[in-house]
Image (cartoon, rainbow, N blue to C red; front, top):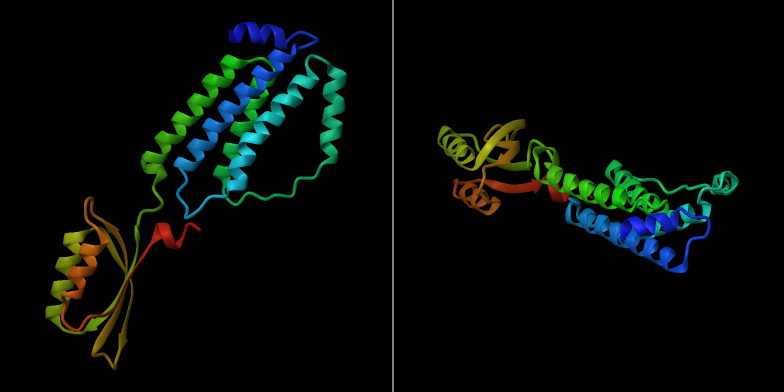
Length: 227
């Protein structure tokens, strides 16, 4: 069926049914790309307008490519018309640009009748996006967040602190240490990476068991950095 549509689409006058099928395929493929974008997004909230733009841009690209067809004159005229438009929307995340190009590519491939290429390319892109999302490349950073607190300057408290961090954290690094209360207390700031199956609630509960510890705060990277 896709081969038949491709032959009809490459002719000088595409039938009305062929145009509808082309737009439908571009819509379905771009919707799949938009769904993958939502599932693999790591920030607090994504732009719904951008997700809608992913779908609509594919339909526009398919429409433009069908209008141009095999006509060189139409292609040059379309290029000149689009050159007049100035797009001033900036993308803060390079990943958004890639997803926009993927949506446009699926629309262009559908518009020129390359339905097999459009389907295989879109599915391959979505699978690659999911693989990267669950791979080490998809991790937000080496450390999960920052831990801050202050406690009394005594060997017993320091020993308890060391045991708690080793028990709950895969990696931890002291980034700041300063005296407060004329050296009677110490203010700590750590970068930490939690162990697998260790929750932040367990870490905070164990820290609060240390006598005279105050100001315990844990800032996780996913909720404080990626906005």
